[in-house]
Length: 332
Image (cartoon, rainbow, N blue to C red; front, side):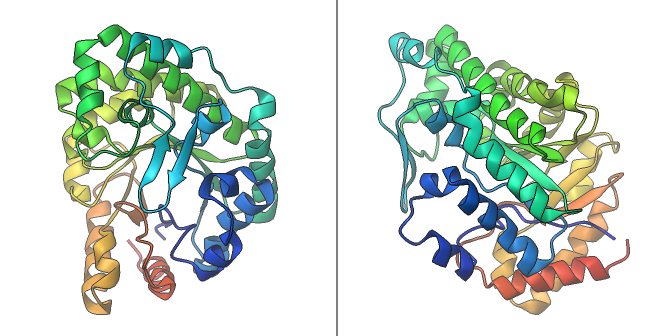
C-alpha cells in the first residue's frame, strides 16, 4: 500500500482549523504548543493519512530569533525591513536559536508525537534560499529579483546571509527531530526561480548545510521545491552531501514521477505529485489522475503519495478523504 499525506493538510481547508484559529494570528498559532499540536492532529483524524506534518511556517525560525516578521492575511510573510546591505546582514547573523526560544516548538512536537502513537510525525523547515529570499525582498515576490541580484552583486553578503539562514533553519529542524519527529522535510518554495547555475552557486551548499544538522540523527529527509524540475538532481546532491542516509526527493506537479525517477538515476524514493488543481476537477478526472500518479510512482524504488504543492484553502475536505481511501485501495 502506498503511504499518503498532504502538504498543508493542516490548515485552511478544514472547518475545525478555522474555528480553532479564530482570533489568533498565524504565527501566534504556530507558537502556542497546544494549538499547534491540535492543528497538526486534525487532518490525521479526519482523513486517515499515514503521517502528520508539523504545523508551522517557514518564517517561524526568524520570529524565534527575534527578526521582525508578520504573516499578512492575503499577502504572506512581511518583514519589518528588507535586508539588502552588508550592514543589514551583519545585524542578522549574530542572532541564533536558543533552547529557550525553541521551547514552544519542542513542547508542541513532543505533545503531538505522544498523541499520534504509531503514526509518524514529519518535521518541517524552510530551505535557506527561500528564507534568504524573503529577507532580501522584505515580502513575497513573484520573481525574487532583489535576492537574485544580491547573489551576484554582493556574493560575500549573500553567502553570510544564506549560511546564517541554513544554521537557523537547520537548528529548527533538528529540534523537531530530537523532540520526536520521525522524518524531516526541507521545503524550498522559491528555488524554482533560480537557474541551475545560480542554484549550484548560491543555494545548494546552504541546503546541504541545513540538512547536515539532522544527518547524525538517522532519519529520512525529504527535499521539496516548487518549479524545480530542472534542479532535481542538484537537490538530491544537496541531501546526499549532507550525509543523509535516507534521502527522499519531493516532486511538484509539473514533472511526472517516472521522468523524475529517470533524472535521479532510478534509485531515490520520491514524494508527490498529485496536481492540487485536480482536487476541484470532479471525481472522474481526479481518480484517473491519482491512478496515473501512482502508476508512474512505481518507477521509483519507493513512493509516498502527496500533492505536488499544498492543499488549496477552498478544497472540500471530503475530497481529500476520498483521495486517501483511493490511494490505500490501489495495490501497486
